[in-house]
Image (cartoon, rainbow, N blue to C red):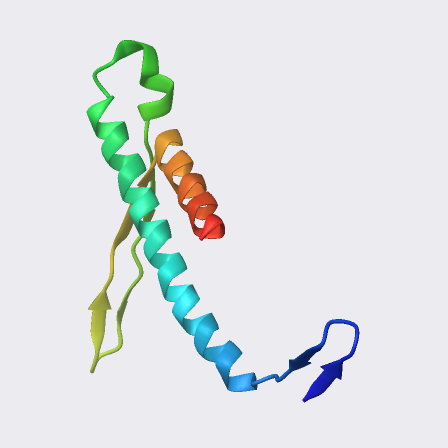
Length: 101
């Protein structure tokens, strides 16, 4: 506990309190990113038929498919991400909204 006479306030630090807030804020931040990405993807799908906006709605696909057969255990995992400029704009907007909270 420290006393700051210039401000007439007492500062009490609690280490665990900061860690709990960090966890909660990380999940909220992740939720905001997901919502922003989905919003951008939906806008991209809805506006794909507008000829003047084709540069915003053109998607690029990123694929990653690791697989292994270890005799006792085998797995196949496939991840495909389709990103457009509107999806990136949705991510940026989500980060901006999160920072304003």
